[in-house]
Image 1 (cartoon, rainbow, N blue to C red):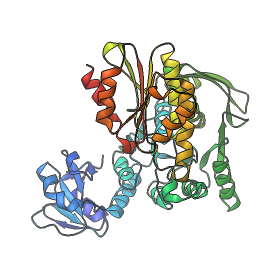
Image 2 (image 1 turned 45 degrees about the vertical axis):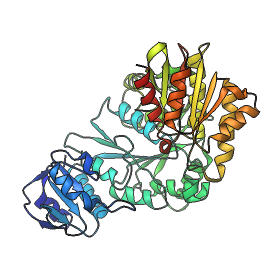
Image 3 (image 1 turned 90 degrees about the vertical axis):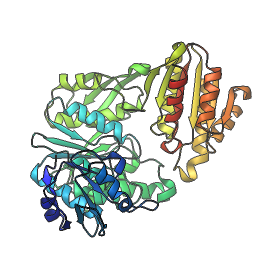
Image 4 (image 1 turned 180 degrees about the vertical axis):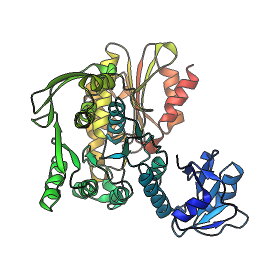
Length: 464
């Protein structure tokens, strides 16, 4: 925790304190609805909302004070700075000076959060680990994560996100990693960045943040990541790499991999020194093995025992809204995978749902996969083809982009009368409640912006 009074914070961020400086701050929030005792409210100015307008509400809700960029009449105490974001970064750097830890930075197009959760779980077998909660991976939320550092912490596992070039550079300037991972480079955020090469450049900024004795965890199966590390080395970068792969020889690579459906994935991994180890990863989906391999690498580097690594991998629970199985009425099992969606994770979820259903009725509810740019139509059509192969009893299509899923599924042989297009989440819930048979398996998946967790919540409520 920060455990700093407002007077100290004002001095650290070179701000002007108005009012009493005695109040003690433990952490910070930028949403007045999240205010709790010990919280500093950050009055951020956005495109649609100005946090300064909610400063009074934050104080009334119990905030210790307000960090702002202009004087707010009638609000005390407040700390006035030129730039709230820069002040947060300064405060985070101060926190790292107080409590130095080994920092592991994780970025990538998909799999960041899962990789972070697996990494933290494995390392927690030996060390005290601070990790980003949820997807707190921005210039605002990463500093807030660091405010949680305490003297007992040894390691911080930090997710680092981006939607534009330069953003990861800003994040590594706040929390320079000793170990860095790019999970992969895929056509996500194409609408913003324009090309896969631009995405690769933006992700590669995390490598440049490594010290000369740092370690880069190299996905040897992703040519964009391999090229990024090669360019880093050609430019004089000295951080060494530890590679992982499911397709070829690497520092660690898989020699066997077998899906166990919703129970997880069994795999065998081999190190270059010849060490062979069997693992049962409790997270479903063979793609999750690629998120586990770098965690095994780091655990080996930091002296976690093989038995502890295996125990940690076998006992990890899925994160919220990620392939979470929810039993509801009429022996129906609902697979909640609504956190986000892209072609890789959607295909994996479809295979898992099919394996889980076996001879039971399978219902698939798919929404738009967003931010795919020029790849959008082809990606949705690909999912339509895979869905047709799964042969569900019913495909429910939600969203304008997802229409291409339904059309391609029909073209590939899924009968038209088994494809339903719904206008919104409420309509999806109503249709499913009216039609779901006993003992069905239902997969619900779509991009974050589709808010398809509303479908899950609606089904849970109506089918109690």
